[in-house]
Length: 308
Image 1 (cartoon, helix red, strand yellow):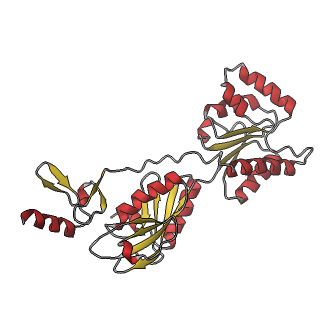
Image 2 (cartoon, helix red, strand yellow):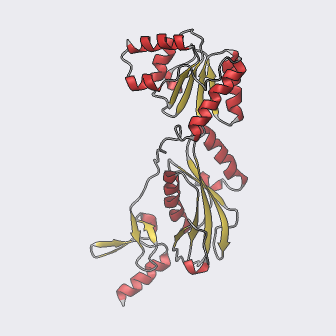
Image 3 (cartoon, one colour):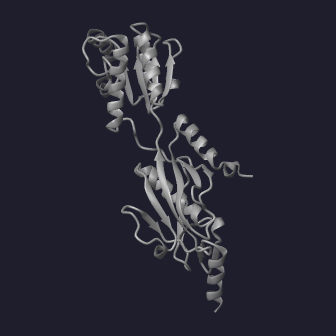
């Protein structure tokens, strides 16, 4: 039994929350209109992840392959859109920007599906145990960011990825070693809570360690917006404000790595629908050519034509 199919209703939304917290990008799909007969129902939901996993139910054998292909395109674009599946004559006037896909399955049903890309939440790693570090962690958690607060001795580059946002707040206790480890992971952001004078000393040290100039220039020392003399709570606000500003500018979004398998496609010679060229698409060999079909009915009609 495919356990992913057992996730439905509120379970799909619960899975979506878990995926968002884990950092994997995915598309959340919701059926917003249907005309029967169709196995997809109003409010039916499904998830398709960047790694190719599907949870929930959006429609039958004709709708699902189309949904998967369009979900990948939605992830690549990073923008939501409306997908209309079925005979275009049944839709009437569609909203601008709707992606219409002719689907001539035997059920003669039609669906409109809202595809919403969900990108991973920022992964913030704060190194230090000062009151400022704790306040920053609490504030970022209020934004639903994934936050890890560790001390200098607890930190290792294995905690980081290229999408990580790193704030070093160790107050001069082992800053050099922490920065050397963090730079190996080439995080999306690396900032240090330190004075400008301390920052110059850290840069000088890192230059002696053959750190790439571009990485040194990208470091933020001191981290955060310049608000002048501030309390530790205000300093946490200044740092978070800079991170929010940069995220809004798209600096932390990055390209979505899509590992979902992308099979070759073929055109069903009977209905003209684009189908995956895979064994489940009812392949039929005629001479040196292999044809693929959306359903057994289209294959039977084609065989009938060949025998005529």
